[in-house]
Figure 1 (cartoon, helix red, strand yellow):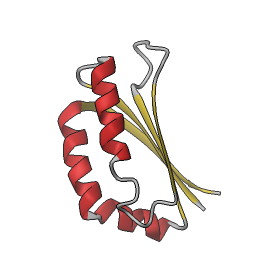
Figure 2 (spheres, one colour; figure 1 turned 180 degrees about the vertical axis):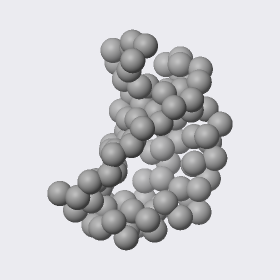
Figure 3 (cartoon, one colour; figure 1 turned 90 degrees about the vertical axis):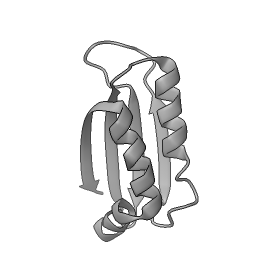
Length: 95
């Protein structure tokens, strides 16, 4: 199992914008077969050091993660992400 975790800090850090990003991320559900599990959470304890949205995904392998990253649906979502996110941080690990 391969896990992909991404944290997003929005340029405009409103609850509405965080919810919109959550919805856009969740729109990939069922459209990219390599995703075996996906959760998206909006931060509920705001602070300057906190990120606004967290993405947690599971894949069968690193190869599946790489296919996901190249998938046209993910590329469309990525365009939106790049338009609203100031900072991203990620961790990818095998378990």
